[in-house]
Amino acid sequence: MPANPQLQLTDYQGQVVDLAALSNEQPTLVYFWGTWCPICSITSPTIDRLAAANDYPVVTIAIKSGTDQELHRYLNKNSYRFTTINDQEGSIFADWQGQVTPSYVILKNGEMTQGLTGIQPLWSLKLRLWLSSVF
Image (cartoon, rainbow, N blue to C red; front, side):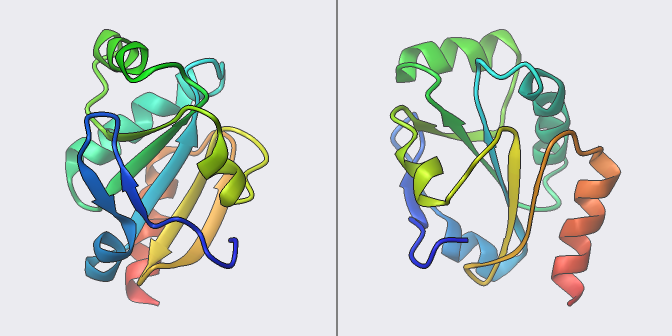
């Protein structure tokens, strides 16, 4: 995790998302993905299910996925309901030192407790979030 990642972000609909505050309450999953990423088309439905369960906060960051309107159409087309930040230029991903999509970060108290990439099953993400809440 970078020394000073941006934790105050604005979603594609203009709502402020405070990752530090969310992760102070309970571990928070940050999911980096792109509409252009073929693996993300496999992982995003899992993230949507995790977000819908509402057990832990989930914030997604769509990297270089077009304008807010294009991203909105993509989310609606796929019935994704997760909170999404539109990282149009990829600067947030670069700030977090991201290398590949999909990538996941679990934050607790504003600090990264875990980072992982690739296809992650729902049970694994839930277990990782739970472990971050316990330890």
